[in-house]
Amino acid sequence: MEIFEYHFMQRALTAGIIVGIICPIIGIFLVLRRLSLIGDTLSHISLAGVAAGLTAGFNATITAMLFALGGSLGIEYLRRHYSKYAELATAITMSSGMGLAVILISLGRGNTASVLCYLFGSIASVTKMDLFIMAAVGLIVVVSIIVLYWPLFFIAFDEEGARIAGIPVNKINLYFTVLTAITVAVSMRIVGILLVSSLMIIPAATSMQIAKSFKASVYISVAAALLSVVSGLVLSFYFSLAPGGTIIMFSLFILLLVISFKKLFAAQK
Amino acid sequence: MQREKVMEKIIEVKDITFSYGSKTILENASLTVFRSDFLAVVGPNGSGKSTLIKLILGLLKPQKGKILIFNTPVEAFNQWKKIGYLSQRAAFFNSHFPATVREVVGAQASAHLGFLKPMRPKDWERVEKSLEMVGLSELGNCLVGRLSGGQQQKVMLARILVAEPELLFLDEPMVGLDPESQESLYMLLEKLHKEQGLTIVMVTHDISGTVKRVNRMVCIHQNKILEHDPQLYKDKKITHSYITQLYHLH
Image (spheres, rainbow over the protein chains, first blue to last red):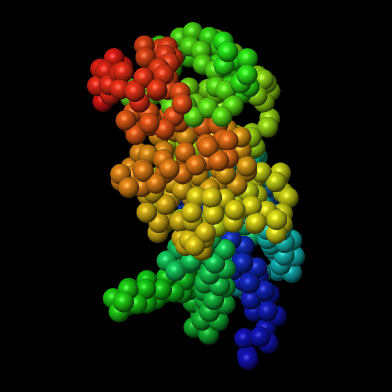
């Protein structure tokens, strides 16, 4: 196939597969803990990181990751101060990220095109260095989720019960927010900053429609995300579409298909 | 006094005072729980029943007084595996959560293994045993959100039992259950108390349902913990309306 003859497409597809695995496995926990907004918040902070990297001449993926890490710590700090209004922590961090991003973008006036690549995703711009960082982050995220699978499941299901059972909930929450931050930062290359949280949320929402167990919901969300990313990248290549938007619209198409089939089967019963 | 000589004290609440801001909930209140007690804690809404449980579990700190669990001050107590706690909210979880009964109980079993230790076949055997104890073996692969309120409450109980605790705290376990499910849950608790020798402390509004089963009953009234002998009620020496009027229960 023509698509595989291009090195940049090989890199984009490899990156897409990594993103298609790590986004939903983080996303399923975010959705079940009703923390869907955290992905959005961290992507806004990442935008500030990208702008800082481009302005200062550093690798923007790395600066985005550092900013997202700072943002994740900020969210955890604020969450303890507003324990009864946890959404305030994400709202404040999101606004701060956006404010900082706008200032930094205005400082680096010549980089508007590069910023757009990060905002909407760009398959042509994935470098070998990006791929290396993505693979490392992907490995960290997957291994962490495997090791922390039961504590994360317990916290998502019943946080108070998890505390009483002796699980170090605060430490795990902090670590999980850090994992979310680095996932957002590396995924934006493919999906774009504005849409990265959608790739965390929509496949998870799809899996919740049909999964018969938690383990199944993790597998289904990964399958839905991988299918969306690969199909989205192929379609964007042949039809010159923005990859981020195509991936997300494909994942939405899968969600609607699943909901329709579910309704159809329910009506037949 | 005779009782204290033969029975092991597993909880001692000594002269505790606790307030939420300016509202005093407990003042110089004391309570001793002995091994194999089935104790009901009753009291009007907002009297501090759940607060008392949270204080004993160390989730809240008293402004004054001391709490010992298994002869250890609660601040220093670390053998939480010995204690099972079924919170008021336990059965009100997100019913769309895609988890099976076996996964929910398995998570609890995993937590008690110690941090980051993987589940072994014998740990899954304990999960099956606790499902069997609550009569849910057949429903292990069902999504927990699809079960009835009574069955969900039994799942929550199975979660606790998987850690093989010595002491159970149940905070309003009957809330939201139909009479049939309540009866079934009461029978299960009686069985656990009698056959497994579990010590049970249960916060409840349901005096008439509880008093027939428990061997001790305390009421939180005007910031104090007062004790009533349930036998007086069983022998019809005091009536349900006497207790409800005395403690302003509804």
